[in-house]
Amino acid sequence: MSTDRDLLSELKDIPDPAAHLAAGPPPAQVEAPAEPSPTRPARERRVVGAILAGLAWILLLTWWEGFRDDLGSPRVALPLVLLAALSGLGLLLALLPRARGLPAGVRALQVLVAAVAVGFLAAAVVTSRVDDVLAPLIVHLECSAVALSMALVPFALAALVLRRSFLSAPAWRGAAIGALCGLGAALGIHAHCSLDEVVHVAFAHGVPIAAGALLGAAAGALRGRA
Image (cartoon, rainbow, N blue to C red; front, side, top):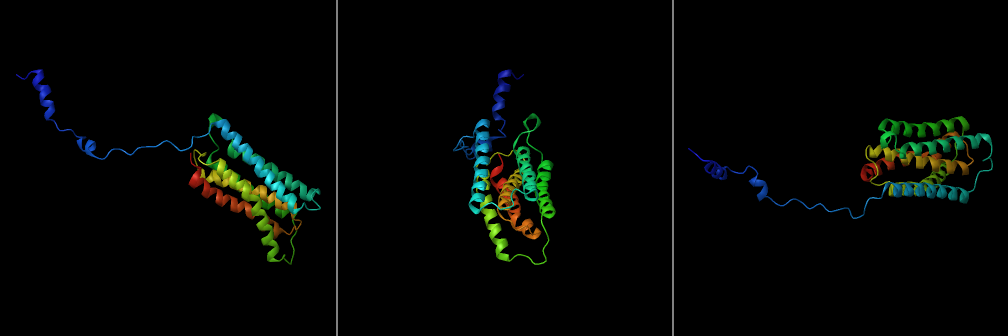
């Protein structure tokens, strides 16, 4: 009869099914990130600082270009106030965590992007006039260039402070924040330019919203995921 010692010695004759793994190359070394991730309070301070800096940039450029003479009239001031409120609420929705610390869902972000675009276009249609003769193309291009320059700094700051910040749906979160940056620039150029023809307002003043949404989606997809 076989003893326990004999049985144990026979175990050495059983081939190791994982021997080929041990003979392979060593696993790749995983290095720690070059820069540590900021804490939640530090990230919140960066976000608030970026919002204030972006707002200051838009106000500075608007002041530099000059405010329109009829800025205080209800037809001009009321849409600006309402769209500014939409911008602030949109930032809260896009950036603040919801219940249980979870971010806003994809559907809420999609609604936010649509609300920014539709809200601006609706304000343009309601408060602008329709002219039979459109302004020269150079006028549209000049306003678009100024509006895009107003959106450049807020968008760059958002891309900088929010990189690796999105736990899910980074493209939609980037699109929402980019559209809101563009909306701020659209408000700035509208506070400067007194040309209230509907085509000019909708497209020349609204171009940073579309550009911000597209660039934000690309930046979120490439650098936004945590």
